[in-house]
Amino acid sequence: MIADFRGLPRDGESTSSRRVPVALENLIVVLEEQYKLEKPSPERSLVENWEAIFGPSLAARCHPVRIKNGTLVISVTNPTLRSEVNFRKRGILRKIQELDYCADITDIVTRG
Image 1 (cartoon, rainbow, N blue to C red):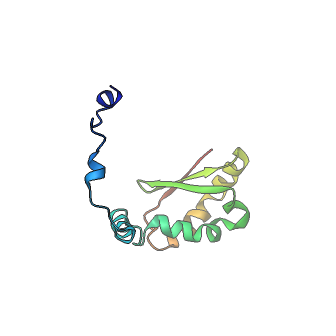
Image 2 (cartoon, rainbow, N blue to C red):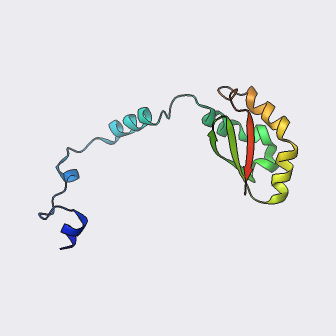
């Protein structure tokens, strides 16, 4: 009854159990291609240079969340840190734009 309700096959065999297993090495290659993990990107450049951009004290307390429409969203741990990042925003943005693949980032937004 539960199998019918959830749309599961009655005989215990699902479509995934009928597929041929894929070697882990092949799966990793597929995922790297699908999500462009090996290609240079602004996200990768930011993560690799985060401490150089913010300095050790700030870098440990704020983290990149996403880049959307040229805006970098940063998560901060408290309102005081948010004020400090906003105060240093122009300098931080300049450092970010100097990085490879990050020239299109034109704004920084902080979130708590």
